[in-house]
Image 1: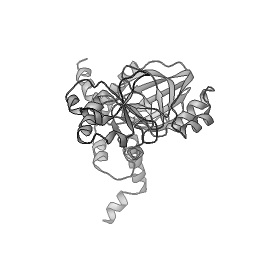
Image 2 (image 1 turned 120 degrees about the vertical axis):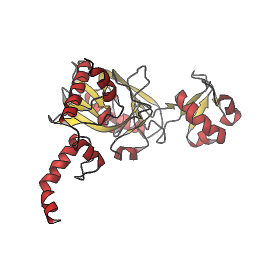
Image 3 (image 1 turned 180 degrees about the vertical axis):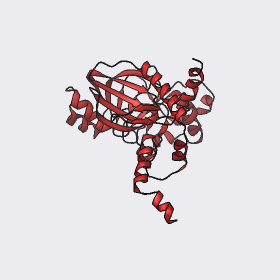
Image 4 (image 1 turned 135 degrees about the horizontal axis):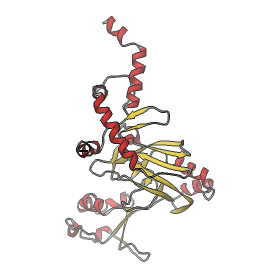
Length: 302
């Protein structure tokens, strides 16, 4: 009716869009189920969420250096700071709830151009071997070679010469599955290493359309980057040991090269569902891994 049109005016649409942005929703000015859920959240519930996250912030390592990378899982975004100011930000894809990206701190030490992807044992067992039992030639199409081991003298093995049924239920597969460098590689063309016990790192990805999704929990745990070349440029701008032109030339081919940073850059992978952004606005995000619920059980006992 005409009265409804007067109520839902331009100012209200803009206010709703601001609210949607602050809650990590698609800011389209339409009251969908996600927006309705956020609108109906009580003040008490939001205060509890803020208290939980203030507690998490206390656990974060103090960073005294000039440069710092923060990846906030519920926000699905990376922030590269220079003295607390953001010099680069981009979307990321984090781990699925059943393959969560771990929360930890480390330092970026190396950048690998045209990386190999050494397929993790869990993926070999759960995904590769069932495919090989149906079609032994599938690895050739996915540009994956099988090696007899991890050493320099390891030989390449013909996948059709192996009885894969022998390893269908085995906990150990005595072969290395390596996807060759190239645009089809699962790691894309660049990976950023901060060696850690979780074997997690940041990398490019050939599955670019997933960045159009609003909630991006799709990986096996590693952090996929929307703009890895932009991140490479940022590292080159702060580290004179990186020759950007030469790096981009290498990326045109398939040669596997590792660049060592002259200064390591701290990286914190965090889980904040409530935080204040760089413009001073309070932000809320969905509890994608259910950690708020878990923490709340013990939090209420204090």
